[in-house]
Amino acid sequence: MSGVKPAASAAALPALPDFDLAGRLALALGRPLADGEPLAVAVSGGPDSVALLLIAVAAWPGRVTALTVDHRLRAAAATETATLAGACAAAGIPHATLVREGARPTAGVQAAAREARYALMGKWCRAQGVGVLMTAHHADDQAETLLMRLGRGAGPAGLAGIRHCRPLLPGLMLVRPLLDVRRAVLAVVAAESGWPIVDDPANRDPRHRRSATRRLLAAAPWLDIAAMAGTAAHLADAEAALAWASDCAWSGRASPAGDAWIIDAAGLPATIVHRLVARAVQAVVNTAPPRGSDVARLAGKLASGGTGTLAGVRATALASGDWRFSPAPPRRDSRDITS
Image 1 (cartoon, rainbow, N blue to C red):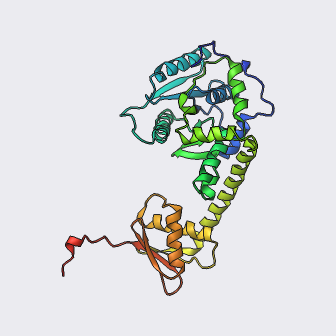
Image 2: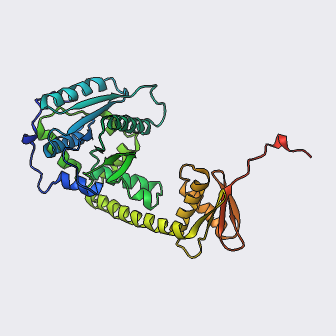
Image 3: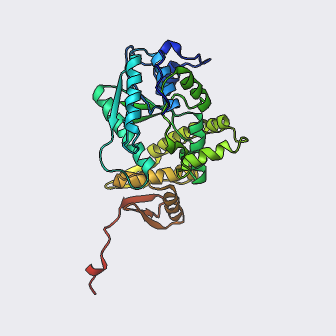
Protein backbone atom coordinates (compact mmCIF):
# COMPACT_ATOMS: atom_id res chain seq x y z
CA MET A 1 0.00 0.00 0.00
CA SER A 2 1.23 3.52 -0.65
CA GLY A 3 1.82 5.93 2.17
CA VAL A 4 -1.27 7.55 3.63
CA LYS A 5 -1.94 11.00 2.30
CA PRO A 6 -4.72 13.39 3.35
CA ALA A 7 -7.99 12.43 1.68
CA ALA A 8 -9.08 14.82 -1.01
CA SER A 9 -12.51 16.37 -0.91
CA ALA A 10 -14.99 15.75 -3.68
CA ALA A 11 -14.43 19.28 -4.92
CA ALA A 12 -10.74 18.49 -5.50
CA LEU A 13 -11.45 15.83 -8.10
CA PRO A 14 -9.84 16.29 -11.51
CA ALA A 15 -12.34 17.26 -14.17
CA LEU A 16 -13.50 14.46 -16.45
CA PRO A 17 -14.79 15.91 -19.76
CA ASP A 18 -18.26 14.70 -20.67
CA PHE A 19 -18.32 12.33 -17.71
CA ASP A 20 -21.90 12.16 -16.44
CA LEU A 21 -22.10 9.46 -13.79
CA ALA A 22 -25.76 10.20 -13.00
CA GLY A 23 -26.68 9.83 -16.67
CA ARG A 24 -24.65 6.63 -17.01
CA LEU A 25 -26.32 5.15 -13.96
CA ALA A 26 -29.81 6.11 -15.12
CA LEU A 27 -29.14 4.56 -18.53
CA ALA A 28 -27.94 1.30 -16.96
CA LEU A 29 -30.84 1.13 -14.50
CA GLY A 30 -33.48 2.25 -16.97
CA ARG A 31 -34.56 4.97 -14.55
CA PRO A 32 -33.13 8.01 -12.78
CA LEU A 33 -32.30 7.79 -9.11
CA ALA A 34 -34.99 8.99 -6.74
CA ASP A 35 -34.32 12.09 -4.66
CA GLY A 36 -32.20 11.09 -1.70
CA GLU A 37 -31.88 7.45 -2.87
CA PRO A 38 -28.80 5.91 -1.20
CA LEU A 39 -26.06 4.07 -3.08
CA ALA A 40 -23.12 1.86 -2.24
CA VAL A 41 -19.76 1.56 -4.00
CA ALA A 42 -17.53 -1.50 -3.78
CA VAL A 43 -14.09 -0.15 -2.85
CA SER A 44 -11.10 -2.47 -2.73
CA GLY A 45 -8.71 0.45 -2.27
CA GLY A 46 -7.20 0.07 -5.75
CA PRO A 47 -7.12 3.08 -8.10
CA ASP A 48 -10.20 2.04 -10.09
CA SER A 49 -12.53 1.73 -7.12
CA VAL A 50 -11.12 4.79 -5.35
CA ALA A 51 -11.74 6.84 -8.50
CA LEU A 52 -15.33 5.59 -8.76
CA LEU A 53 -15.96 6.33 -5.09
CA LEU A 54 -14.75 9.92 -5.35
CA ILE A 55 -16.65 10.54 -8.59
CA ALA A 56 -19.81 9.10 -7.03
CA VAL A 57 -19.42 11.24 -3.90
CA ALA A 58 -19.05 14.30 -6.13
CA ALA A 59 -22.24 13.36 -7.98
CA TRP A 60 -24.30 12.43 -4.90
CA PRO A 61 -22.86 14.08 -1.78
CA GLY A 62 -24.00 12.47 1.46
CA ARG A 63 -25.70 9.52 -0.27
CA VAL A 64 -22.81 7.14 -0.96
CA THR A 65 -21.41 4.45 1.33
CA ALA A 66 -18.09 2.72 0.58
CA LEU A 67 -18.05 -1.05 1.13
CA THR A 68 -14.74 -2.85 1.58
CA VAL A 69 -14.36 -6.61 1.98
CA ASP A 70 -11.47 -8.12 3.93
CA HIS A 71 -11.14 -11.64 2.53
CA ARG A 72 -8.47 -12.54 5.08
CA LEU A 73 -6.33 -13.91 2.29
CA ARG A 74 -3.35 -11.56 2.84
CA ALA A 75 -1.72 -10.47 6.08
CA ALA A 76 -1.65 -6.83 4.93
CA ALA A 77 -5.38 -6.71 4.12
CA ALA A 78 -6.52 -5.69 7.61
CA THR A 79 -4.09 -2.75 7.68
CA GLU A 80 -5.04 -1.69 4.18
CA THR A 81 -8.74 -1.81 5.04
CA ALA A 82 -8.22 0.20 8.20
CA THR A 83 -6.27 2.85 6.27
CA LEU A 84 -9.03 3.09 3.68
CA ALA A 85 -11.64 3.40 6.42
CA GLY A 86 -9.61 6.22 7.95
CA ALA A 87 -9.39 8.05 4.63
CA CYS A 88 -13.16 7.78 4.21
CA ALA A 89 -13.73 9.06 7.73
CA ALA A 90 -11.46 12.03 7.09
CA ALA A 91 -13.45 12.87 3.96
CA GLY A 92 -16.82 12.38 5.68
CA ILE A 93 -17.71 9.36 3.53
CA PRO A 94 -19.59 6.53 5.29
CA HIS A 95 -17.62 3.28 5.12
CA ALA A 96 -18.30 -0.30 6.15
CA THR A 97 -15.74 -3.11 6.40
CA LEU A 98 -17.17 -6.56 5.71
CA VAL A 99 -15.09 -9.56 6.78
CA ARG A 100 -15.20 -12.98 5.14
CA GLU A 101 -15.45 -15.74 7.71
CA GLY A 102 -14.51 -19.39 7.33
CA ALA A 103 -11.54 -21.35 6.09
CA ARG A 104 -9.33 -20.12 3.27
CA PRO A 105 -10.39 -21.69 -0.04
CA THR A 106 -7.92 -24.28 -1.32
CA ALA A 107 -8.87 -24.05 -5.00
CA GLY A 108 -10.44 -21.42 -7.24
CA VAL A 109 -9.38 -18.69 -4.81
CA GLN A 110 -10.36 -15.75 -7.02
CA ALA A 111 -13.77 -17.20 -7.88
CA ALA A 112 -14.45 -18.00 -4.22
CA ALA A 113 -13.40 -14.51 -3.20
CA ARG A 114 -15.67 -12.94 -5.82
CA GLU A 115 -18.63 -15.03 -4.63
CA ALA A 116 -17.98 -14.13 -0.98
CA ARG A 117 -17.53 -10.46 -1.83
CA TYR A 118 -20.86 -10.13 -3.61
CA ALA A 119 -22.63 -12.15 -0.93
CA LEU A 120 -21.33 -9.91 1.85
CA MET A 121 -22.04 -6.66 0.02
CA GLY A 122 -25.46 -7.87 -1.06
CA LYS A 123 -26.38 -8.78 2.50
CA TRP A 124 -25.26 -5.37 3.76
CA CYS A 125 -27.20 -3.50 1.07
CA ARG A 126 -30.38 -5.46 1.77
CA ALA A 127 -30.06 -4.79 5.51
CA GLN A 128 -29.51 -1.05 4.95
CA GLY A 129 -32.21 -0.59 2.32
CA VAL A 130 -29.73 0.23 -0.46
CA GLY A 131 -30.96 -0.74 -3.92
CA VAL A 132 -27.94 0.18 -6.07
CA LEU A 133 -24.41 -1.19 -5.69
CA MET A 134 -21.74 0.11 -8.09
CA THR A 135 -18.43 -1.49 -9.03
CA ALA A 136 -15.52 0.03 -10.94
CA HIS A 137 -15.22 -2.49 -13.77
CA HIS A 138 -13.86 -0.61 -16.79
CA ALA A 139 -13.01 -1.00 -20.48
CA ASP A 140 -9.75 -2.85 -19.81
CA ASP A 141 -11.59 -5.36 -17.59
CA GLN A 142 -14.12 -5.82 -20.39
CA ALA A 143 -11.43 -6.47 -22.99
CA GLU A 144 -9.73 -9.01 -20.71
CA THR A 145 -13.04 -10.78 -20.14
CA LEU A 146 -13.78 -10.91 -23.86
CA LEU A 147 -10.35 -12.39 -24.64
CA MET A 148 -10.58 -15.00 -21.87
CA ARG A 149 -14.02 -16.11 -23.00
CA LEU A 150 -12.92 -16.28 -26.63
CA GLY A 151 -10.25 -18.70 -25.46
CA ARG A 152 -12.91 -20.88 -23.87
CA GLY A 153 -15.10 -20.93 -26.97
CA ALA A 154 -17.94 -18.98 -25.34
CA GLY A 155 -21.18 -18.27 -27.16
CA PRO A 156 -22.99 -14.93 -27.54
CA ALA A 157 -23.97 -14.68 -23.87
CA GLY A 158 -20.39 -15.21 -22.69
CA LEU A 159 -18.85 -12.93 -25.30
CA ALA A 160 -21.21 -10.14 -24.24
CA GLY A 161 -18.81 -9.83 -21.32
CA ILE A 162 -19.47 -7.86 -18.17
CA ARG A 163 -22.98 -6.45 -18.09
CA HIS A 164 -23.70 -2.81 -17.29
CA CYS A 165 -26.46 -3.83 -14.91
CA ARG A 166 -27.86 -7.03 -13.42
CA PRO A 167 -29.90 -8.02 -10.38
CA LEU A 168 -27.69 -9.14 -7.50
CA LEU A 169 -30.56 -9.86 -5.11
CA PRO A 170 -34.28 -9.05 -5.18
CA GLY A 171 -34.45 -5.28 -4.86
CA LEU A 172 -30.70 -4.80 -5.39
CA MET A 173 -29.10 -3.93 -8.73
CA LEU A 174 -25.39 -4.33 -9.45
CA VAL A 175 -24.27 -1.54 -11.80
CA ARG A 176 -20.99 -1.03 -13.66
CA PRO A 177 -21.15 2.53 -15.02
CA LEU A 178 -17.50 2.72 -16.18
CA LEU A 179 -17.34 -0.03 -18.80
CA ASP A 180 -16.34 2.38 -21.56
CA VAL A 181 -13.72 4.20 -19.44
CA ARG A 182 -10.05 3.19 -19.68
CA ARG A 183 -8.06 2.06 -16.65
CA ALA A 184 -5.49 4.82 -17.28
CA VAL A 185 -8.15 7.53 -16.91
CA LEU A 186 -9.22 6.19 -13.53
CA ALA A 187 -5.58 5.87 -12.46
CA VAL A 188 -5.11 9.60 -13.08
CA VAL A 189 -8.20 10.42 -11.00
CA ALA A 190 -6.93 8.27 -8.14
CA ALA A 191 -3.36 9.60 -8.31
CA GLU A 192 -4.44 13.24 -8.31
CA SER A 193 -6.88 12.70 -5.44
CA GLY A 194 -4.14 12.10 -2.89
CA TRP A 195 -5.91 9.03 -1.49
CA PRO A 196 -3.99 6.00 -0.23
CA ILE A 197 -3.99 3.28 -2.87
CA VAL A 198 -3.88 -0.46 -2.29
CA ASP A 199 -1.44 -2.45 -4.41
CA ASP A 200 -2.67 -6.05 -4.46
CA PRO A 201 0.11 -8.33 -5.78
CA ALA A 202 -2.52 -10.86 -6.92
CA ASN A 203 -3.31 -8.48 -9.78
CA ARG A 204 0.13 -9.23 -11.24
CA ASP A 205 0.30 -12.94 -10.44
CA PRO A 206 0.60 -14.77 -13.80
CA ARG A 207 -0.90 -17.90 -12.22
CA HIS A 208 -4.27 -16.15 -12.37
CA ARG A 209 -5.85 -16.24 -15.81
CA ARG A 210 -6.94 -12.59 -15.71
CA SER A 211 -3.46 -11.41 -14.73
CA ALA A 212 -1.92 -13.44 -17.56
CA THR A 213 -4.48 -12.02 -20.00
CA ARG A 214 -3.69 -8.50 -18.82
CA ARG A 215 -0.01 -9.07 -19.55
CA LEU A 216 -0.88 -10.45 -22.99
CA LEU A 217 -2.91 -7.36 -23.85
CA ALA A 218 -0.14 -5.07 -22.62
CA ALA A 219 2.34 -6.88 -24.88
CA ALA A 220 0.08 -6.56 -27.95
CA PRO A 221 -0.53 -2.84 -28.57
CA TRP A 222 -2.26 -3.68 -31.85
CA LEU A 223 -5.19 -4.98 -29.77
CA ASP A 224 -7.40 -1.92 -29.31
CA ILE A 225 -8.83 -2.09 -25.77
CA ALA A 226 -11.58 0.45 -26.43
CA ALA A 227 -12.62 -1.34 -29.63
CA MET A 228 -12.70 -4.70 -27.83
CA ALA A 229 -14.88 -3.23 -25.09
CA GLY A 230 -17.11 -1.81 -27.82
CA THR A 231 -17.36 -5.26 -29.40
CA ALA A 232 -18.53 -6.68 -26.08
CA ALA A 233 -21.17 -3.95 -25.92
CA HIS A 234 -22.40 -4.84 -29.43
CA LEU A 235 -22.55 -8.50 -28.45
CA ALA A 236 -24.50 -7.58 -25.32
CA ASP A 237 -27.07 -5.87 -27.56
CA ALA A 238 -27.19 -8.96 -29.79
CA GLU A 239 -27.59 -11.19 -26.74
CA ALA A 240 -30.51 -9.06 -25.55
CA ALA A 241 -32.15 -9.47 -28.95
CA LEU A 242 -31.62 -13.25 -28.84
CA ALA A 243 -33.09 -13.41 -25.35
CA TRP A 244 -36.15 -11.48 -26.54
CA ALA A 245 -36.56 -13.76 -29.56
CA SER A 246 -36.21 -16.82 -27.33
CA ASP A 247 -38.90 -15.52 -25.00
CA CYS A 248 -41.21 -15.02 -27.98
CA ALA A 249 -40.46 -18.52 -29.24
CA TRP A 250 -41.08 -20.02 -25.82
CA SER A 251 -44.41 -18.23 -25.51
CA GLY A 252 -45.60 -19.50 -28.89
CA ARG A 253 -43.92 -22.89 -29.16
CA ALA A 254 -43.71 -24.40 -25.66
CA SER A 255 -46.62 -25.87 -23.74
CA PRO A 256 -46.90 -27.82 -20.47
CA ALA A 257 -48.16 -31.39 -20.48
CA GLY A 258 -48.49 -32.57 -16.88
CA ASP A 259 -44.96 -32.85 -15.51
CA ALA A 260 -43.52 -32.54 -19.04
CA TRP A 261 -43.04 -29.79 -21.62
CA ILE A 262 -43.66 -30.04 -25.36
CA ILE A 263 -41.67 -27.89 -27.78
CA ASP A 264 -42.18 -27.21 -31.47
CA ALA A 265 -38.68 -26.33 -32.70
CA ALA A 266 -39.36 -26.75 -36.42
CA GLY A 267 -37.77 -24.12 -38.64
CA LEU A 268 -36.12 -22.13 -35.86
CA PRO A 269 -32.47 -20.98 -35.97
CA ALA A 270 -30.08 -23.25 -34.07
CA THR A 271 -29.33 -20.63 -31.40
CA ILE A 272 -33.02 -20.24 -30.57
CA VAL A 273 -33.50 -24.02 -30.58
CA HIS A 274 -30.66 -24.46 -28.10
CA ARG A 275 -32.14 -21.85 -25.81
CA LEU A 276 -35.54 -23.53 -25.91
CA VAL A 277 -33.97 -26.89 -25.09
CA ALA A 278 -32.04 -25.43 -22.15
CA ARG A 279 -35.16 -23.68 -20.88
CA ALA A 280 -37.24 -26.85 -21.19
CA VAL A 281 -34.68 -28.80 -19.17
CA GLN A 282 -34.77 -26.15 -16.45
CA ALA A 283 -38.57 -26.02 -16.54
CA VAL A 284 -38.79 -29.76 -15.86
CA VAL A 285 -36.19 -30.11 -13.09
CA ASN A 286 -35.49 -26.53 -11.93
CA THR A 287 -31.75 -27.02 -12.31
CA ALA A 288 -28.87 -24.69 -13.07
CA PRO A 289 -28.46 -23.78 -16.75
CA PRO A 290 -26.95 -26.79 -18.56
CA ARG A 291 -23.70 -26.40 -20.48
CA GLY A 292 -24.01 -25.17 -24.03
CA SER A 293 -22.13 -28.14 -25.50
CA ASP A 294 -24.48 -30.57 -23.73
CA VAL A 295 -27.52 -28.68 -24.95
CA ALA A 296 -26.24 -28.66 -28.55
CA ARG A 297 -25.58 -32.39 -28.38
CA LEU A 298 -29.10 -33.11 -27.11
CA ALA A 299 -30.66 -30.85 -29.74
CA GLY A 300 -28.77 -32.72 -32.42
CA LYS A 301 -30.14 -36.07 -31.22
CA LEU A 302 -33.68 -34.72 -31.19
CA ALA A 303 -33.34 -33.16 -34.63
CA SER A 304 -32.43 -36.59 -36.00
CA GLY A 305 -35.49 -38.17 -34.36
CA GLY A 306 -33.68 -39.67 -31.39
CA THR A 307 -33.82 -39.37 -27.62
CA GLY A 308 -31.43 -38.22 -24.94
CA THR A 309 -31.07 -37.43 -21.26
CA LEU A 310 -29.65 -34.28 -19.70
CA ALA A 311 -29.61 -33.18 -16.06
CA GLY A 312 -32.31 -35.66 -15.05
CA VAL A 313 -34.56 -34.84 -18.01
CA ARG A 314 -35.45 -37.29 -20.78
CA ALA A 315 -36.03 -35.66 -24.16
CA THR A 316 -37.85 -37.50 -26.94
CA ALA A 317 -38.60 -36.61 -30.55
CA LEU A 318 -42.30 -37.39 -31.12
CA ALA A 319 -43.88 -38.65 -34.31
CA SER A 320 -45.57 -35.27 -34.70
CA GLY A 321 -42.19 -33.58 -34.96
CA ASP A 322 -42.49 -31.97 -31.53
CA TRP A 323 -40.01 -32.65 -28.73
CA ARG A 324 -41.10 -33.87 -25.29
CA PHE A 325 -39.13 -33.14 -22.12
CA SER A 326 -40.05 -35.09 -18.98
CA PRO A 327 -38.39 -36.27 -15.75
CA ALA A 328 -36.02 -39.12 -16.51
CA PRO A 329 -36.77 -42.38 -14.71
CA PRO A 330 -34.40 -43.08 -11.82
CA ARG A 331 -31.36 -45.12 -12.70
CA ARG A 332 -31.47 -48.70 -11.55
CA ASP A 333 -28.45 -50.04 -9.73
CA SER A 334 -27.15 -53.26 -11.24
CA ARG A 335 -27.48 -54.96 -7.85
CA ASP A 336 -31.24 -54.38 -8.03
CA ILE A 337 -31.63 -56.20 -11.34
CA THR A 338 -32.87 -59.74 -11.02
CA SER A 339 -32.69 -62.38 -13.73
